[in-house]
Structure formats: C-alpha cells, structure tokens
Amino acid sequence: MKNLLISLFLIVCISQNGFSQKKIWDETANEKTERLAWWTEARFGMFIHWGLYAQAARHEWVKKNERISDADYQKYFEIFNPDLFDPAEWAKKAKAAGMKYAVITTKHHEGFNMFASEYTDYNIMNTPYGKDIIKQWVDAFRAEGLGIGFYYSLIDWHHPEYTIDRVHPQSASTTEEYDALNKDRDMGIYRAYLKNQVREILTNYGKIDILWLDYSFPGEFGKDHNDWGSVELLKMVRELQPEIIVNDRADLKDYQGGWDFTTPEQFKVKKWPEENGLRIPWETCQTFSGSWGYYRDEHTWKDNKQLLVLLIESVSKGGNLLLNVGPTARGTFDERADKALAEMGEWMKVNGRSVYGCTQAPDIFEAPDNTLLTYNPKTNRLYIHLLDYPMQNFLIRGMGDKIKYAQFLHDASEIKMGKPYGHWIAQETEENDINLLLPVTKPNVEIPVIELYLK
Ligand code: GLC
Image (tube, rainbow, N blue to C red; front, side):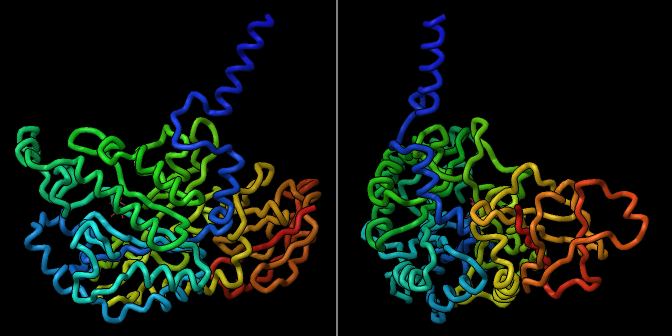
C-alpha cells in the first residue's frame, strides 16, 4: 500500500512538472500565465499582411495559385515603391479601433523581406523604395504604445535551396518528380538561413513582444519541425527574447516552451480550446474579407456586427482576436478597411470595458438567448452583449441573489430591475429570476452591453 502511494505521488509530480515532456526551456504554469498576462488582457490586435503581393492585388498566395515563376514574379520586386506609407497613421488607426498590439509580416511565403537583411539581396533595401519598412513600422507602433509582433514565414518560395514541397508554386505529383526538382537543393542551407533571419529580426529592432511563425504541414511532400530545425530555432528565440510570446505553428506542440498559444484561423471555435484537458491560451486570426494580402476585387467583406461578434465571442471563450488588414502597394489602408476599423473603434470606445481584461464567464452564469457573456474577474463584473435587442423585459434566470446593480455600459445609465411588464411573463418568473426593464428603443450602439455589478 505504502509503495503504491509513493508511486502514485511520483506519477502526479512527474506529470505536473512535465518531466515526461520534451523541453525547450523551463517555466512553471504560473510563470507562463504571468508572461502572457499583458496579451491576455489586451484581447484585440491587428494583423498586417504586406509584401510584394500587394501589387498583384489578388491574394498573398498569388505566386502559388497562378504558379508564377521567379522570373515572372521579379517585376514586383523591381517596382515596389509604397510612396504613401505612413506607419504613424496606421498605428493611430489601430489604436483608435481599440487594438492593443499588432503583428506584421516581415517575410511572407513569397520570400521577400520587408526588412534590411544581410543574408539575402531579396529585401526592401534593393527595391525602388529602399528604406527599412520594419524599422519605421516598429518605431511608429511602439510610439502609440502598441505591442510589437513579427510574422515570419517558415515557407519560402524564393530561396534557391528551399526544397519544393506540396505548397510550393512548383509543386509536383510524384516522388520521382520531387526528387528531380530537389536534386540540387539543400534544405540544410535554407534551415541555417531561416535561423539567421529570425536572429536578425529579433536582434535589430529592440524588444519584440510576439513572434508568429507560419507554418508546418507534415506528411507527404510536406514539412515539419525537422525541416525547420524548430527545436534549435525556438531555443534561440527564447534566449534572444525571453519574454516573447510565440504561436504554435513550428510543429512543436509536444515540447514545453515550443509554443505559447494556439491559432484557429478563419473559423470560430465551439468552446475554449484545450490541450490534455487544460484550457490553453488562444487567438483566432481573421480577415475582413477572404484574403490576407490586399485583394482589389474581393467583395466578401464582413459587416460591423459580424466583426464585433468575432471579437466578443472570442473573449466569451477566453480568447483573443487578431484582425487583419492588407495594405495597398501605395502603403495605404483601403477605404473598406478604414471604414471597418473606424466602426469597430466607435463601439470599442464606449464598450471596451467588456473586452479588455475579460474572459469566459464562470459556469454558474448561463447566457440568456441571443447574448454573449464576458466577465472581468478583477472587478467581478459580468457583461451581457445583446445581439438581438429584446422587448423591454429582459429576464435573467437564477441570478436574483447575485446582482447588485445593472447599467448600460456605453452611457452608464441605470437599468432598473423590477416586476416584468405584462402579466403573461409574470407567470413564468421563478423565485431567483431577475427582470431588467429595458427602454423600448435600442440604444444607438451596434451591440448594446449590459454591465452587471455582482455581489
Ligand atoms: C495561412 C496562410 C497565410 C496567412 C496565414 C495567417 O497560413 O498561408 O497566407 O498568412 O495563414 O494565419
């Protein structure tokens, strides 16, 4: 019996401390929570996809989608000159929208560097523009107090040693074809290049808050952590920027320290994502329309309410939203992006309190129909987002003994609690239900929020 208890104790210790796990670095769960605290609190960030593909203006995957050769893609490099680029203006727009951090593509799959690099000529300094975009961007965004994030593509459709795989513009079908295509390519050289470049971006621009590596696709004609040298890469990243927050696309899911948050892309999670039964930090990345890079003729833009729901719903499940802008090749946000950001900012200005520092509500609170709940554990306030504005009576079940005070968030106007109007509803009310008496007219905000002070 004693031996059994000792073994059980050891098993618990081992699994709690993660001895059984492969490791990039040591950090307790509490330390990780602390390191991520600013980001968890922030909830809302801007993604920026910008590169040579902005000139094609038909998706950042244009080189692959149209199987464009290096020679034919070269014209974009030779004319790139975003003469209207004003990062201070971008930063102001991000901030006004309510965003607290931003992540920009330093290099996307096309392989072009928006930063000055000593490891390739295929970088911004050799275009007609000739100035380091990343440097200017970092300075401007930092000046607005925004968190700074770098996206770096693991995939590279320009590097001559990068082996052709199934997502490459020159992708093939059979093993023989791949062998022939790759016979003079040495992935080891690319691996060293990738590490050198990540070192550059994490060394030359001061403190970087987020690193977004993109992406692994294991399996046939694919690439995984061995191809990228992810273990060594992440060790270097942690050493250079110990506080940095890293996404989960370097294929190191079973390594402690190999990733910090998960990244559901272009879809809504059903519930707070978990790993081994534990809730994990997450951030969904979403576009205004179907493309990340500027796409002139794409018209499936989400409306203001859809965008706000994306944000609120993420927070209601304990996650963040990284919302993408694809600037034009002149260096501007197009009018559709400007409009979307401005509208979200209008809402955030008066309702941000239901987003920042908020998370999923404790299970005891059940969301009434057509609402999303968020909760601030520090202030002990509960937020009810009214997606479909109710008719005067707003019945909250089982919470009569928990609510101290109710108000609209946008104007801090009291919402009285009392007997429901209309005798039909009175019959349906139970002991601990509470009824809020809402004005008939929907307040002039896209999604009204009720702020509940809890006992
Ligand atoms: C995908 C796409 C890419 C985009 C990214 C954003 O990995 O390849 O174009 O940058 O998702 O999450």
